[in-house]
Image (cartoon, rainbow, N blue to C red; front, side, top):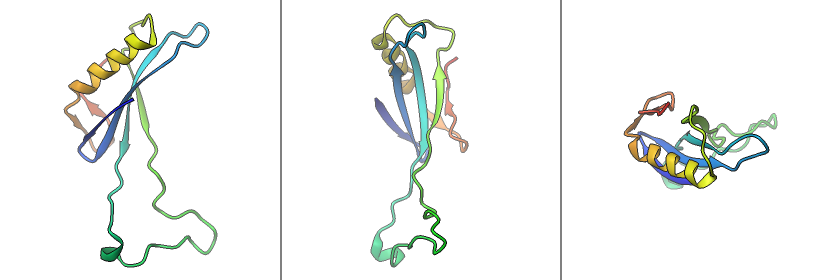
Length: 104
């Protein structure tokens, strides 16, 4: 997995192994970065809700984008190479977490 940080998002490139009749696939995934707050600046860390709910700062969920959907990769190495090249071309991420340019 390769990672690039752009516009407050972490953009990750990865590929999947072939499974049965499903060929290897290439993906880009975006995940919003959580702002780090120093303990001295923000005061005491927030405690969990008394109702037993999780704290508001849950880890962000990733938003995967399958790329090169029309292409059939011969191996996971070829798919990872395509994902790496697509990650190198990403120049920005919009506020919804969509990388630009997003291949196919």
